[in-house]
Image (spheres, rainbow, N blue to C red):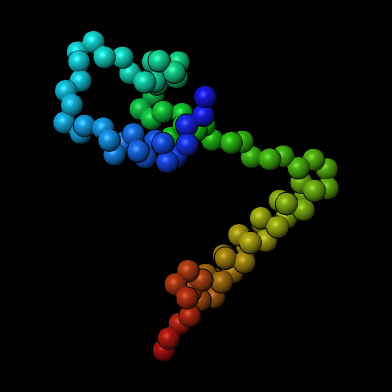
Length: 90
């Protein structure tokens, strides 16, 4: 059974905001079987993805490009130029 956004909106607007929840009420996460042991649920902050690995020559090209960007930022800073706040206005 699929519920549309319009149906959910209608249900939310029709609900009583001052309802008192029973002491024996069951959490929706317990009913859905979602493990909510952490500080944030998995749908809110999923596990981080792993970095993609590039085998062979592609890995060398990726590493070279990353090192080139880092070296260019270091060179710009070594010459005393600003590379983070825009143009220098004198």
